[in-house]
Amino acid sequence: MYAHPGPEGSTRSLLRQRPFRVLLAGQTLTLLGDLALILVLGVWAKNLTGSVSAGGAAFLAMIAPTLASPLLGCVIDRYPRRRVLIVNDLVTAVGLLPLLAVDGPGTVWIIYAVAALYGFSQQIFFAARAALLQSMLDDDHLGPANAVLESLRMGLRVAGPVIGTALFAALGGGAVALMDAATFVASAALLSSLRVPDIERRRPTGVIDELAGGIRHIRATPILRRLMLSLCAAVAVLGLLQVASLALVDSGLHRPATFLGVIFTVEGAGAIAGGIAAPALLRRLGETRLAAAGLVVAGISLGLMASPDLALVLAGSAIGGAGFSAFLIGYTTLLQRSTATELQGRVFTAAEATAGVPYTMMLGIAVLGIGLVDYQVILAAGMLVLAAAGAYLGRGAAAAPRAAVTAAQGEI
Image 1: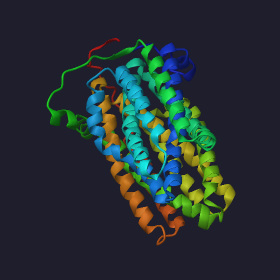
Image 2: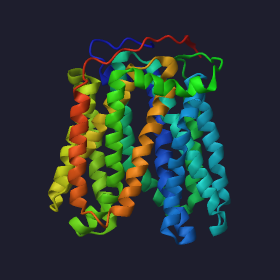
Image 3: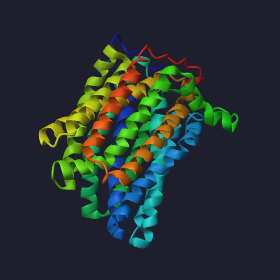
Image 4: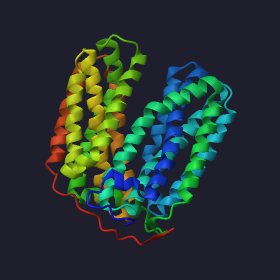
């Protein structure tokens, strides 16, 4: 491992490590660029065609690559992760340039193509980053690192779309694309300066064996089986909430759809607070209990949001943001600590692909059935599901196994 964490594995000692600061700077740039452009792609497609569904199709194009994530996991586990991240940054930067040719409804297909590329890029980015962290940091620093990165992501989720839409309104989509491409190039340059432990390039084995490696490891590890079932329950609820939140604002609060921006901002603030508190909670609870508690807290938040009272809805949004943030930090840390270095990419992408199925199914069900079921019933059902998932995960909260690092590591 790269460095000894000290007695507490604290965030402060983590931030004293130059490699993590460099990685953090690069990820700040790419996440800001990502979040600035992602919303713009949908708005741009809608403006060109006049169709709301055309704008929504851009987001669907970004989700579709989830189906190919196991293949991407094989790539991540075959090459040094730092190099995978660098190549991913540079390919994505070049892949954004066709957006400069978008000039009317006839070229909206370029937006969809770039959105799909973005989906692939993000799959590689999150899995390769998690795998690189596992090899470059001491075990006790993984939790604080994930907490810092999750807090950063939630903070930029508030700022990024504002910057992107303002730049789009002033200079057009091409300017946003160029800005985002520049952040990827800058990130690649920062990653190039890193000298940290990483896996060596390895020769491929059988295709089926490689593809099944991640799922096989999850199935063979009891705590990860519990984690995956809990994750599927959580993302199923999130799929419902994507649609139910519109009904909450319209039928419950009697406000315009744009008020969702206020709710998302409050949720983001809660998630940042949850991320800040997570390192101390990890030391007390461990990653499994933290993830379980996060689900229970998120369930409680849905009970508050079922009320038509604005104060309770906003309080529920903040609490829910903190709960989901705690779950994601515990989930990521548990996967990292329970998986050998050479399997990290395949395990993370297998988890992503598995979770994508219930999310997409429940999103579709919500779109078709939101007019038939009151949003308060959906929120109450979501509360019960999340609480049950948290209790189920918490029952398996024995110390998670520490993965033996068996891959050959070296400085690159």
